[in-house]
Image 1 (cartoon, rainbow, N blue to C red):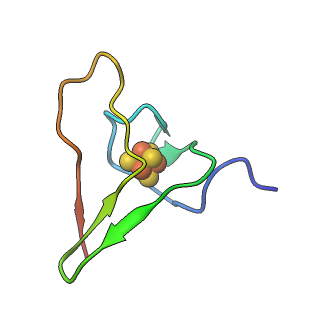
Image 2: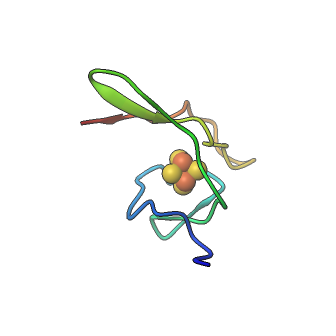
Image 3: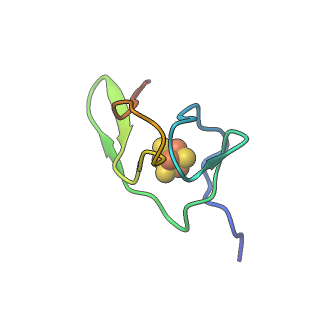
Length: 57
Ligand code: SF4
C-alpha cells in the first residue's frame, strides 16, 4: 500500500502533513462545492498561524 495519499501536490505548506508539497496523511477528507475544494484533514503546524487554505477548481 502506498504510504502517501493520492494527492499529487498540495500547496498548503502550513499543514503538518505537508512535506515538500506532498501529503503524508494516511487518508484525507475533502469538501467540494461548485467553486472550490477544501481539505478537511488540514491541520496547522504548531508554529503556523494561518487559516485553512482552499483550492479553486
Ligand atoms: S492533509 Fe490536506 S492540506 Fe494537509 S497536506 Fe494533505 S492534502 Fe494538503
